[in-house]
Length: 205
Image 1 (spheres, rainbow, N blue to C red):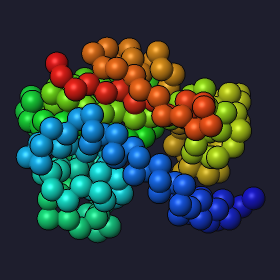
Image 2 (image 1 turned 90 degrees about the vertical axis):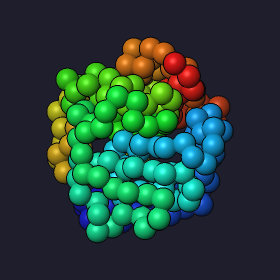
Image 3 (image 1 turned 180 degrees about the horizontal axis):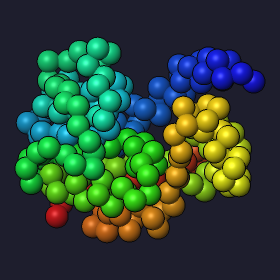
Image 4 (image 1 turned 30 degrees about the vertical axis):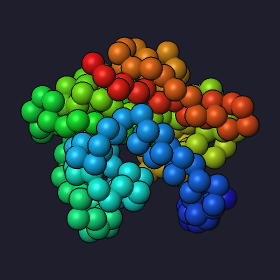
């Protein structure tokens, strides 16, 4: 399969109803666990173009940050502002937000930056919701290939170069996520009974 055909297949898959259902379910879980009122301020760490909480939440004040400038394509909501910033050096004071949200970000970071990312989330927020794909789910979610995360490094390097612009992916286990967020509960999103995603949720400190 060519890189172009692969990208087309991924776009097609991303538009399927079951993917939309999963996104909405994740947002609803976040809202139920972490939002106490419409006034709660939310920081979306590693927001991309704003296709999850910004899509569903039209009330809470949301600040979205990402390393890349997504301004031109960011979802246009009056309750949302976008700031280009590094998730490992968040440019806001301690406890600036009521809630922090981060979806499928930590697995994209170099291993040496994971602790800084987790420390920054815990520094700027009193509550948080951090999701990442489960390393032990049989389908690698970035390539949609079975067991790709267990292949030798040279194979993963080839996959990254071929299909992911050279960006390495380091999926986490529940134990690794817990170590980054020791005051959180680890919640598992399941698909056909198997934990597909892991979520570190802290509702109080």
